[in-house]
Length: 239
Image (cartoon, rainbow, N blue to C red; front, side, top):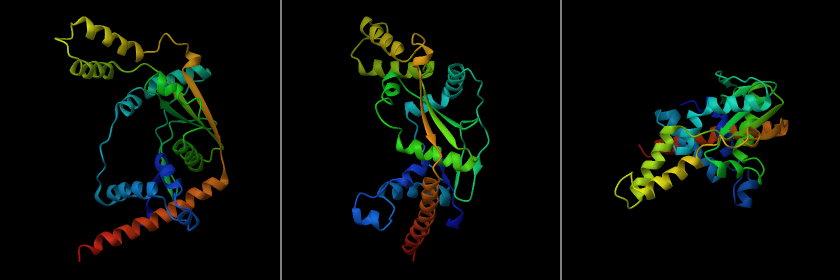
């Protein structure tokens, strides 16, 4: 394998950017345990073309409602947006931004009202910051936005939640009044048409930072060295 050509996905650059816990490791410029763990996944993916099939209900909703969230944002900003389908790459990273306009817009579809509003008190998630910085590097844009959108949950996911509820409850059937009452709560909590549109979008803006882009480049170079050393160590056990 030629690890010098490995491209890190923009969505996972943030794992590389985490700092080691130990002060000595940080001062030595070593990769964190979080970065190393992620690079193990990269190693397996690149060398053996195998990827873990991990899909939570939150991820499933995010995939299924992406267009609905783009439509919501278009109505909210009174500007039509279309899903970008072009993947960008440079010599270090690769990425597929959701929307390319004057800047980059990345859509995050919240699972429910609790996860949506939970984004308010904190600063932007670190992984998302580095994802936006990566997209700006790839596209030459100087600004980016994370848009959290709250749209209705697809019926198939709601039905799945009701199925799990039925299995958990000690009732005779889905016709039981106790189950019907709790199932109605599930449906109410997973649909949001009663909430004003202006209250279903949260936006975090990120400005391009050349120093941080240089940090990404340096981390990718270290990641490639780590992957090469990992392969050498791995192959030693075959001898």
